[in-house]
Amino acid sequence: MDYDFRLEMKVRDYECDIQGIVNNSVYMNYLEHTRHEFLLSKKVDFADLAAKGINLVVTKAELNFKSSLISGDLFFVTLKFNPVSKIRFEFEQNIYRSKDEQLALSATITGASISDTGRPIKVPEIIEQISV
View 1 (tube, rainbow, N blue to C red):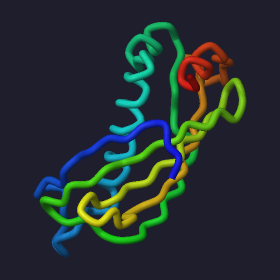
View 2: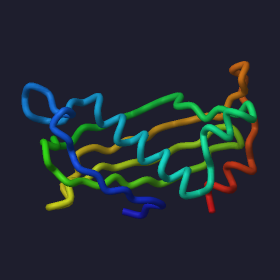
View 3: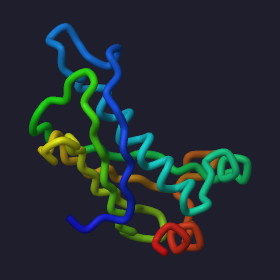
View 4: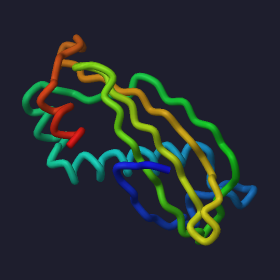
């Protein structure tokens, strides 16, 4: 798969449910952490943006669970950034178990930039910075 960023992680015991597999809600944390690390690698910092009145928010999350991760699994998350407009963007993300590259989850996360008042705000310079 063609991707812009990759982050490796390890499943921790407390992320698993009574069935011994990663709880479905935890996958959202993995995806979010990867997006934040990607943005930081592009010199885009949420705290700095928020101080300027620019908020990058998730507006839609589509997750397709394929196979389960268990405690101790090493895995990696890939990310592809797709600008949709000067306000909206998408992240195509996949989670793979490292030992066999088995796909555990595929996701499309849609986001937008909004002001402190909740109104859409154009941020073409940030979109360009992320796209490079």
